[in-house]
Length: 111
Image 1 (cartoon, rainbow, N blue to C red):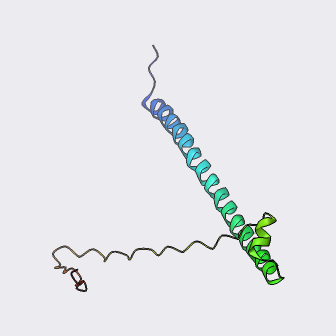
Image 2: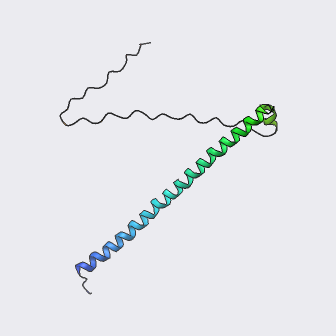
Image 3: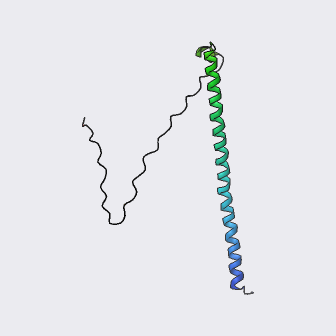
């Protein structure tokens, strides 16, 4: 059996490792592409919903009733989803040895 040099073994091992990393990188690349496509479709849907709501409101202003439009198969547009507020950020961590006192919360009436 022919002995390989340390340099050849290292080179072969690095090539194999890079091939594995390339496969893993392709997986996250595919996920990023799918997320981008999803985001574009979500934006298109938001725009289409806004256009539909505008046209539906124009029909109402033009004399049609909600009942008339429903009979014609035109459902009322969905209202925009309520925006969720982000929770407050936690306070920055204290330096080692620094005394931290928790914030005083407003007293809640006991029921």
